[in-house]
Length: 101
Image (cartoon, rainbow, N blue to C red; front, side, top):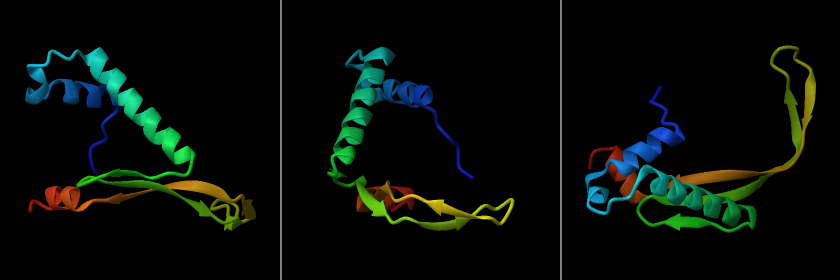
């Protein structure tokens, strides 16, 4: 299982990048940018749009139909309501980076 990074660790990692050292962006400013990014992605997905970050990937939504599932503890059938789900498809650049190409 991989390492999990929480938001504070993400902010610290982005703020600590050498590319940003010259810009004097504080952790608070980086946190505001990350919050704005996440809010924008969420709002666009809520409207049914897609977010395409070339080389990184695409965030999109799809509708999952209602159905039945089983409670793993009791084995009882449970009705599952239809819902919107978020999908992320990684881009070529991200795949290549992860695979060391």
